[in-house]
Image (tube, rainbow, N blue to C red; front, top):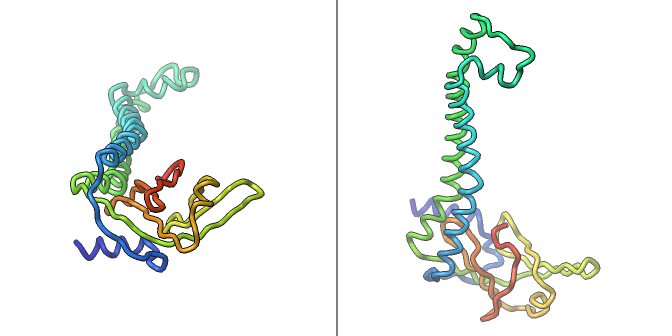
Length: 199
Protein backbone atom coordinates (compact mmCIF):
# COMPACT_ATOMS: atom_id res chain seq x y z
CA UNK A 1 0.00 0.00 0.00
CA UNK A 2 2.82 2.41 0.92
CA UNK A 3 4.65 1.47 -2.31
CA UNK A 4 1.55 2.32 -4.37
CA UNK A 5 1.35 5.70 -2.63
CA UNK A 6 5.02 6.43 -3.38
CA UNK A 7 4.46 5.51 -7.06
CA UNK A 8 1.41 7.79 -7.18
CA UNK A 9 3.44 10.69 -5.72
CA UNK A 10 6.22 10.03 -8.24
CA UNK A 11 3.73 10.22 -11.09
CA UNK A 12 2.29 13.51 -9.83
CA UNK A 13 5.51 15.34 -8.88
CA UNK A 14 8.41 16.49 -11.04
CA UNK A 15 11.34 15.71 -8.75
CA UNK A 16 13.97 17.50 -10.88
CA UNK A 17 12.81 20.90 -9.62
CA UNK A 18 12.26 19.90 -5.94
CA UNK A 19 14.91 20.69 -3.33
CA UNK A 20 13.25 18.85 -0.44
CA UNK A 21 9.89 17.94 1.07
CA UNK A 22 8.53 17.60 4.60
CA UNK A 23 5.29 16.62 6.30
CA UNK A 24 3.40 19.07 8.51
CA UNK A 25 0.09 19.27 10.40
CA UNK A 26 -2.96 20.76 8.71
CA UNK A 27 -4.17 24.07 10.14
CA UNK A 28 -7.86 24.54 11.02
CA UNK A 29 -8.37 26.86 8.01
CA UNK A 30 -6.86 24.27 5.66
CA UNK A 31 -9.15 21.55 6.99
CA UNK A 32 -12.08 23.93 6.41
CA UNK A 33 -10.90 24.55 2.83
CA UNK A 34 -10.78 20.80 2.18
CA UNK A 35 -14.25 20.28 3.68
CA UNK A 36 -15.59 23.16 1.55
CA UNK A 37 -14.09 21.52 -1.55
CA UNK A 38 -15.86 18.24 -0.65
CA UNK A 39 -19.20 20.05 -0.14
CA UNK A 40 -18.81 22.02 -3.37
CA UNK A 41 -18.07 18.88 -5.40
CA UNK A 42 -20.92 16.92 -3.82
CA UNK A 43 -23.33 19.79 -4.58
CA UNK A 44 -22.41 19.42 -8.25
CA UNK A 45 -22.50 15.63 -8.64
CA UNK A 46 -25.10 14.35 -6.16
CA UNK A 47 -28.02 16.34 -7.69
CA UNK A 48 -27.12 14.98 -11.15
CA UNK A 49 -27.05 11.45 -9.73
CA UNK A 50 -30.42 12.05 -8.03
CA UNK A 51 -31.98 13.33 -11.27
CA UNK A 52 -30.89 10.23 -13.21
CA UNK A 53 -32.26 7.94 -10.47
CA UNK A 54 -35.51 9.96 -10.43
CA UNK A 55 -35.87 9.55 -14.21
CA UNK A 56 -35.48 5.76 -13.87
CA UNK A 57 -38.03 5.62 -11.04
CA UNK A 58 -40.42 7.88 -12.99
CA UNK A 59 -40.40 5.54 -15.99
CA UNK A 60 -41.09 2.55 -13.74
CA UNK A 61 -43.88 4.17 -11.72
CA UNK A 62 -45.56 6.02 -14.60
CA UNK A 63 -45.74 2.92 -16.74
CA UNK A 64 -46.55 2.94 -20.46
CA UNK A 65 -48.14 6.38 -20.11
CA UNK A 66 -44.64 7.85 -19.74
CA UNK A 67 -44.05 7.70 -23.49
CA UNK A 68 -47.27 9.63 -24.14
CA UNK A 69 -46.12 12.37 -21.69
CA UNK A 70 -43.51 13.40 -24.26
CA UNK A 71 -45.42 12.51 -27.45
CA UNK A 72 -49.04 13.34 -26.65
CA UNK A 73 -50.00 13.93 -30.27
CA UNK A 74 -48.38 10.73 -31.54
CA UNK A 75 -49.56 8.30 -28.85
CA UNK A 76 -53.02 9.42 -27.84
CA UNK A 77 -54.00 5.80 -27.20
CA UNK A 78 -51.55 3.12 -26.04
CA UNK A 79 -51.96 -0.28 -27.68
CA UNK A 80 -51.58 -3.55 -25.79
CA UNK A 81 -48.50 -4.40 -27.83
CA UNK A 82 -46.87 -1.08 -26.86
CA UNK A 83 -47.60 -1.79 -23.17
CA UNK A 84 -45.96 -5.22 -23.39
CA UNK A 85 -42.94 -3.72 -25.17
CA UNK A 86 -42.72 -0.97 -22.59
CA UNK A 87 -42.60 -3.40 -19.65
CA UNK A 88 -39.92 -5.40 -21.45
CA UNK A 89 -37.69 -2.34 -21.92
CA UNK A 90 -38.45 0.00 -18.96
CA UNK A 91 -36.92 -2.13 -16.14
CA UNK A 92 -33.67 -2.56 -18.12
CA UNK A 93 -33.56 1.15 -18.94
CA UNK A 94 -34.06 2.07 -15.26
CA UNK A 95 -31.48 -0.48 -14.16
CA UNK A 96 -29.03 0.85 -16.77
CA UNK A 97 -29.47 4.41 -15.44
CA UNK A 98 -28.99 3.22 -11.84
CA UNK A 99 -25.87 1.16 -12.59
CA UNK A 100 -24.25 3.73 -14.89
CA UNK A 101 -24.81 6.69 -12.56
CA UNK A 102 -23.73 4.68 -9.49
CA UNK A 103 -20.51 3.55 -11.19
CA UNK A 104 -19.77 7.13 -12.26
CA UNK A 105 -20.40 8.47 -8.73
CA UNK A 106 -18.31 5.69 -7.15
CA UNK A 107 -15.37 6.37 -9.48
CA UNK A 108 -15.64 10.10 -8.85
CA UNK A 109 -15.79 9.55 -5.07
CA UNK A 110 -12.76 7.24 -5.04
CA UNK A 111 -10.65 9.62 -7.16
CA UNK A 112 -11.71 13.02 -5.80
CA UNK A 113 -13.56 12.87 -2.48
CA UNK A 114 -11.97 9.88 -0.72
CA UNK A 115 -8.37 11.25 -0.96
CA UNK A 116 -9.55 14.52 0.63
CA UNK A 117 -11.27 12.57 3.42
CA UNK A 118 -8.02 10.63 4.02
CA UNK A 119 -6.01 13.87 4.26
CA UNK A 120 -8.51 15.34 6.73
CA UNK A 121 -8.44 12.15 8.87
CA UNK A 122 -4.63 12.04 8.95
CA UNK A 123 -4.50 15.83 9.45
CA UNK A 124 -1.25 16.01 7.46
CA UNK A 125 0.00 18.09 4.54
CA UNK A 126 3.08 17.86 2.37
CA UNK A 127 5.32 20.92 2.03
CA UNK A 128 7.35 20.89 -1.19
CA UNK A 129 10.25 23.32 -1.47
CA UNK A 130 11.32 24.03 -5.03
CA UNK A 131 12.92 26.61 -7.30
CA UNK A 132 10.33 27.95 -9.78
CA UNK A 133 10.85 29.06 -13.34
CA UNK A 134 9.29 32.39 -14.20
CA UNK A 135 7.53 33.33 -17.44
CA UNK A 136 6.44 36.91 -18.07
CA UNK A 137 3.99 37.83 -20.82
CA UNK A 138 4.20 41.59 -20.24
CA UNK A 139 2.34 42.41 -23.44
CA UNK A 140 -0.77 40.67 -22.01
CA UNK A 141 0.02 41.63 -18.39
CA UNK A 142 0.22 37.96 -17.41
CA UNK A 143 2.85 36.41 -15.15
CA UNK A 144 3.42 32.70 -14.59
CA UNK A 145 5.55 30.48 -12.40
CA UNK A 146 6.04 26.73 -12.55
CA UNK A 147 4.87 24.34 -9.87
CA UNK A 148 6.30 20.81 -9.59
CA UNK A 149 3.11 18.97 -10.55
CA UNK A 150 3.06 16.94 -13.75
CA UNK A 151 -0.56 17.76 -14.59
CA UNK A 152 -0.30 21.53 -14.08
CA UNK A 153 3.14 22.99 -14.51
CA UNK A 154 2.34 26.72 -14.61
CA UNK A 155 0.04 28.97 -12.63
CA UNK A 156 -0.73 32.64 -13.06
CA UNK A 157 0.22 35.04 -10.27
CA UNK A 158 0.10 38.81 -9.81
CA UNK A 159 2.87 41.07 -11.11
CA UNK A 160 3.76 42.09 -7.54
CA UNK A 161 4.23 38.46 -6.46
CA UNK A 162 6.08 37.68 -9.69
CA UNK A 163 8.59 40.50 -9.12
CA UNK A 164 9.08 39.52 -5.46
CA UNK A 165 10.43 36.10 -6.49
CA UNK A 166 14.19 36.32 -6.96
CA UNK A 167 16.47 33.94 -8.82
CA UNK A 168 17.25 31.02 -6.52
CA UNK A 169 14.34 31.61 -4.11
CA UNK A 170 12.79 28.47 -2.69
CA UNK A 171 9.00 28.49 -2.86
CA UNK A 172 6.92 26.29 -0.56
CA UNK A 173 3.96 24.52 -2.12
CA UNK A 174 1.66 22.94 0.48
CA UNK A 175 -0.80 20.23 -0.51
CA UNK A 176 -2.62 17.15 0.72
CA UNK A 177 -0.41 14.04 0.33
CA UNK A 178 -3.29 11.78 -0.79
CA UNK A 179 -5.51 14.25 -2.66
CA UNK A 180 -2.85 16.60 -4.09
CA UNK A 181 -5.27 19.39 -3.13
CA UNK A 182 -3.17 22.58 -3.27
CA UNK A 183 -3.48 24.50 -0.03
CA UNK A 184 -0.94 27.29 -0.15
CA UNK A 185 1.99 28.74 -2.06
CA UNK A 186 4.57 30.74 -0.10
CA UNK A 187 7.76 32.63 -0.78
CA UNK A 188 9.40 32.64 2.64
CA UNK A 189 6.72 34.00 4.99
CA UNK A 190 4.90 35.80 2.16
CA UNK A 191 1.79 34.09 0.73
CA UNK A 192 1.59 34.18 -3.05
CA UNK A 193 -1.98 34.94 -4.09
CA UNK A 194 -3.39 32.53 -6.66
CA UNK A 195 -7.03 32.80 -7.76
CA UNK A 196 -7.60 29.06 -7.82
CA UNK A 197 -5.06 26.57 -6.47
CA UNK A 198 -7.32 23.63 -7.41
CA UNK A 199 -6.76 23.85 -11.16
